[in-house]
Structures are given as structure tokens and as C-alpha cells.
Length: 314
Image (cartoon, rainbow, N blue to C red; front, side, top):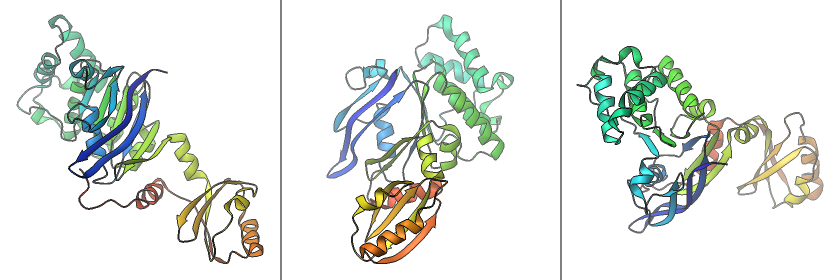
């Protein structure tokens, strides 16, 4: 596999506060990584370190094989970045702005036209190339922002909240563009919109209180959503190994305070067997509730397990 991003034991302190705590993950070519986290969880700090705008306290970041600290200029050439507020100049035309960006990226003069033409075509900007950016809709301004991020054909594209403030049609168009970009690049998509991750991404990560608390494929996440589950509350601590061998049970999560979530196959319902084992074992059945979880519920459950303090990093 072609690893475009390698983050190894990344840690960042602000004074005594640990904003990012020993985070490790990789991004492969062709992957679109949805990076999620509640406000103050350390997501922005992680993104800034990957982009080389913030030095880690410890750990290593490699971009397409280049260490971001040892070879910052070379590594940053492999990155394209769209911040939440696109860095566009409203008084310039699309062509003028992209030409300016091409010069900033250090592209040779003889490559300018080809780079601009390709970026405009991929982002659907050819028909508005001569218009002032300030006169374009917000959706088109986002497209211009993405065009500057891919102009130099980087290995990795980082998009921070790319659909905020767009109407439903514009959101659909930007998501289609992101999926298209994911075929030739590695993409990191930072967003608060969970449906966006489901529709656009191949991988999903959730960071909370500085720690990576979920790292799974979209298929794995959807399996959790499809899988039915039971929530049980008991009077005594059970022997989970005895519950786990009941046919159709996939896994059991300890929710604390003698509450457990039991995941089971979609087409089977082991509720009766679970209840019978609990009663005959004398564990004291207080509650047995079937449930199906949305992605929102998975996100809430995971992030509630490690509450974020008010003074957490941005």
C-alpha cells in the first residue's frame, strides 16, 4: 500500500494540558478519511500539526515519505489545504487568483496553464474563469478554494469543513468532487456533519479529549449501525465470557454501572437466551432493551465515555 500520511505517537501539550495524546494513524492513496471530534477534542491541533503549522511536543509525521520536521518545505509541497474559510481574494477573477496560487506553489512558468486548466476542469470552474470571485456563489467560492488546494497535484488534500454554509445542491456537488479527488489522492476531511462522512469517506476517525477513540472503515462503522443491539442493566457484575458465547452475539461493550450493550447479528435476536442466562445465573435483570444505533448515537456514545473539559484545546 502507498502510505501518504504516517502519524506516529503524535502528542501536543499546551502548558500542562495535553491536547493531543499519543495519536497514531495512516492514510493510504485512494482513501478519504473523515476526521471527527467534538469541539475542543484536539482535532484542529492534529490538523495543524499534519499541515506543519504547529510543532508537535513529540511524535512523528511523514507526508509521502517526507518528515514534516526534517524536510518541511518538501513535505508541505505534498499537501493541499482548504481551511474552513476559503483563502480567496474576492477582487480577483478565478484565473487571476489561481495564477497567483500557482506562483506561490512554485510551479514553473511553463506549467501554469496546464495546471490551471486541469484544476478548473476538475472543480467545474472553466465557465466562470473570467468572473470576479466576489461575484460567485459561496458554492463556487468553495470550488475555487479546492482548486487552489489541488493546483500543484499534491499527494494529500486536507479539507476543513468544506460544505459549511452551502445549500443542499451545492453540498451534493462538493461531495461528488471530494469523492472524485479521493480516486487520485489521499483526502482528509475534517467535518462536524456525520452524514457527510457516511456519503463521502472510506475511513472514519473520532478524536476525543486528545485520544483517538475510533479508527474504522466506513464498512465497519455501518456494520455497527446495521447490527442490532440490546442494552441490559444488571444488579450484579456478570461473567461476560458466558454471555459472549451465546450464538449471534458479536461483541459486548461495558457502559459502566452494570450496564452493557450487546451487539448481535441483524437477522437474529438472542434476547430470550440472554434474559434466561442472566436470570439463571442470578445476576439480577433490571433492564433489557433492544435498540438500533445511528451514526450520531455511536458518536455520542463514544465521546461521552471520555468527557471533554471546558479548557480543552481548539
